Amino acid sequence: MEKIIEQVTDWEFLRKLPLEIYGFTLINEFMTCGSQYRIFTYNNQSARRSFTVMYDKATKDFLVRTVIGLTELCDISFITGNLAALEKLLTERMDKTLWGLAHFEPACLCAQFAGKKITEWAYTSQLPKQLAGFELFITPQEPFKGLNGSYVIIDYSDFATESNLVVNYNIFRDQFFSEIRLRRTPLMTSEFDAKTLPDLEERLKGNLNPTLEQLRLKLQ
Image (cartoon, rainbow, N blue to C red; front, side, top):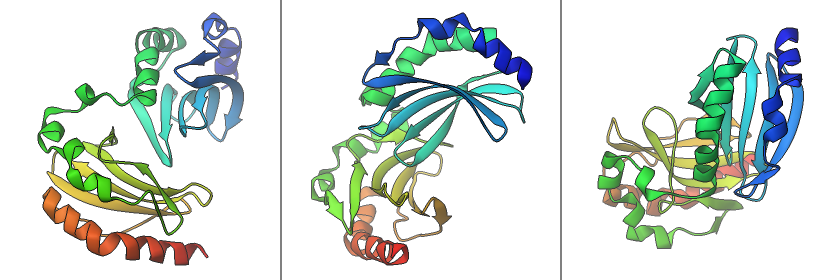
């Protein structure tokens, strides 16, 4: 790790980074967190989005972690074992990735997801903005791609307690499913499992309010 820290300290690339871009502010971190060394972060606090470049001693890789709300993702397109390759990847892809974090781009949705017509779903307008102290953070009109072929289409979050209810659509299973985090601890739920949008709509009508109310009670 000491050799990596020395290389990063002398890394000329860092001195050329813009202080602000697309609403993100640069934070030079240079700090060790467990087996990882955090190099820099572009953070948009109001949008609750960030882009962090780090080194992982356990895997001996440089990597990028993006955060959208309470969802953290490792962007595999940036994983590399040396600093020169990382600089090349960041030069080629970082600007586009930050723009994508700051703006929803329908053209980036895969064909199968687009064919499901989720972004055009009329029921979206009936989703309450606030419910049981949870904020509607992600809507079906502006989903984002998660892991393993899943897109986050609904996210009700309480950021103060780091708890939320997320509804996803998986393109490989052609199925809607949900996840609950209680103070970041995952909880199982099948209340919103569905194959079609009309089915999901019925499940939301019957289960959204009581599910979030129950989650609120567990937080008290």
